[in-house]
Image 1: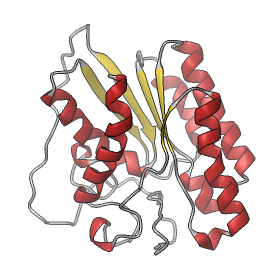
Image 2: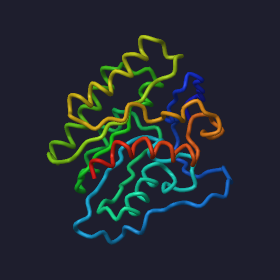
Image 3: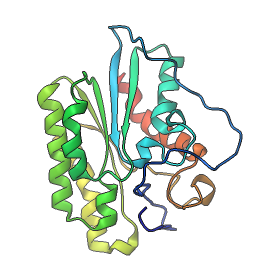
Image 4: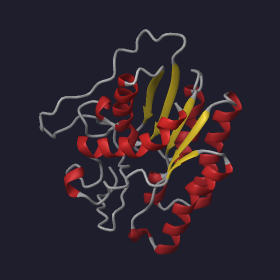
Amino acid sequence: MLTRIIAVFGLFIAVACGSSTRSEDGNGRSAEAPPDTTSVPSATKNILFFGNSLTAGMGLESQTLAFPGIIQHWIDSLALPYRVINAGLSGETSAAGNERIDWLLNEKVDIFVLELGANDGLRGIPTEETKKNLQSIIDKVTAKYPDCKLVLAGMMVPPSMGGDYGKAFTAIFPALAQKNDMAYVPFLLEGVAGESTLNQSDGIHPTEEGHRILAETVWKVLKPLL
């Protein structure tokens, strides 16, 4: 687990290393789980969410409570022919994601949502390296599925990483979105980062309610593509 960082500045990144997806929340709220997708009609298209612990829903009782699962529920309520695939992995860096993406592309991808880079920022990895890795991931997706629609989730680093680094890091995402004609979410944690009531006890990972806000933020950009 990366060191707990709480940014009052209104940003922060849920990217701690670890693989647990169980919650100690105990708030008793029920999950809005997507339907069984073990038998998916041939006409159903796939939305691949590729990211770190934010996408994976670290600390929640189920991945269905993470923002991709909530989006699946909304898709189903509108009877849209899409299946969400949650490929979030806690602790993932852009370099590790660049290595992992290949086998995930064995299944057809119609919409690709990229949420990576935050762990790079926490570790102070050079921004050009992060940008290069993310571009490689995008290139692999478009090479195999040229008609795939692309969505990029932007991220920020806390002020403690330094002003120059912070500016360079934040600039990675709009530049990639413009270069690759991607639908763009400027800041995935908008309205959630730094809000104690919307984050778990570590001050980093969003609660169930926090993930609902993340879902709303992504949904505004994703829905027009469906």
